[in-house]
Image 1 (cartoon, helix red, strand yellow):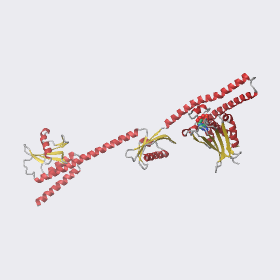
Image 2 (cartoon, helix red, strand yellow):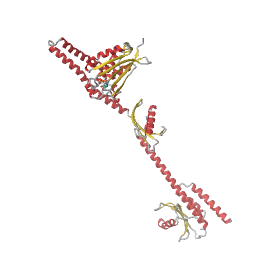
Image 3 (cartoon, helix red, strand yellow):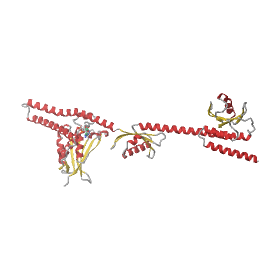
Length: 499
Ligand code: ADP
């Protein structure tokens, strides 16, 4: 009983020291060292060899100088270790023993320890020793496997980190800002370019809005928008997994500016061709009528002469109008469109403007109606400039009338704006109308809608740009609503004159 107690104690002490050694083992050489130490407690080891087995070949990773066998001689011992997979003592022909301690995990031999004992006596190799060795073999197998697994995990973590760095480098080398947002609109990733852009709050809000739309519709979004900071393009996609959104954004201000400049360049070219044509038409008429008068003055009766002279006058007025428009445009470009405000009766001015377009509305067979709350409604503004605005708007309403329409109508309305110190002037027509896409563009300089009607009727594309500029100088603006095939409605407001 006491004998058993002693041997249990010895086993526990040996086991404790073996565990301590293994706990600090960092690699297979350390494990071999621990085995060597623990075996040293039982018998005197002269020299040792440790080799790992990968299922095909052996790899010696620790060998003492005095170990008596070379690789060729080891072959049979390797086979023995593989065959038995448990600790064994092999008596050598030249006296002594070879202790073989294989490390096995789940029936697989991972490595083996071979220790040379110069001892002729095998009394020491008791059943108890064999049991202990069996345990050490099993235990070192577990530790070896754990070390291998740990190595694998560490390697895979290293690879993942390398991969992460590689992708980050790629994303950072892009000239686009890239960010990823989670479902609640929080940023989970930003690349270097994104940070460098130092985006204003409004752009950040736009990114969040796009992200939430992408999530709601489960579909990528693409748009371009102008901000104080510049023109940006946005593209979003739902990332695999569904909960996160990737948004790419690019500063396209330069591209947009180039596009704009090209467009203006093209419009200028068209404008020059257009204006030459515009000037030639009245000039040709004036020349033709003047020649007829000069050549056939004697044969012309007073009535015909008056009619011819009237045409010359109309065409001269039109020439003056065109030249004035060019002059105003040049003033507008130089920000020199001066406004000289006074108090005047807008209803009377509208009547005059209607009269000024008589030639045009008669030629286009258009009826012009004036609706005013009163005969006298006084406003504050530059009378000459507002006259110009009215003539432009009325001329357009006549020119862009619908040929299919039985009766072409233009209605000019002057009305007080409720609860305000303003008066609204509106011009309605039942003309061809303007499609949604062109509603704002028509106020750009040189812009003319690309349609067959525009080519037929005279115009420079400057009228509405000048109208808007004049009204902006008054602290007002001009608005349009329209429906293709039904007609257009233009309106602007002026301040009521103080009594
Ligand atoms: P334009 O000298 O060509 O008339 P504007 O600047 O006055 O130049 O107008 C720009 C363009 O807007 C016109 O070419 C025409 O295509 C469109 N437009 C203006 N007014 C009307 C209207 N009342 N109805 C339909 N189209 C219009």
